[in-house]
Length: 179
Image 1 (cartoon, rainbow, N blue to C red):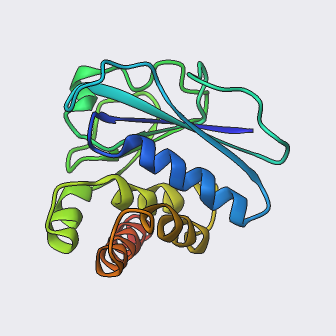
Image 2 (cartoon, helix red, strand yellow):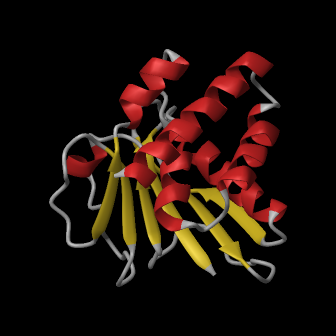
């Protein structure tokens, strides 16, 4: 089973990112499960989302002590939270930042904020980071991420907003693959 911990702040979509990753896994015949970490329920507070992907049904829930991957959707989290806590040996951090963080693990970076502002016209980076995660980890395919995004966001966004999110995912994917 692959475990992914997502760090962000309340209202930034860390849990939605986990839901989309989990949904993408199901499009590939895998099992996906997502959940939210215990948190103070207020916009802007540090929060965690969790996604698990496996070949068998997943019964484990809640926080994870040894994630394989960590996704950081808010660059300010890097200085406020120990994102490497419990990260498995050989684990990868995928971070939204223009700077190279001082971390012990491999870290893949993308300027998701700039991509979000350019394409989405908002600084919401959760879907942008999906493209970076797929490019850095290959845990699911880009096509599955796009299907999962369409399914999850289709419940709350109009078609033009979904299409913009898909373009932002592709841009982040391309940026990470070309770096």
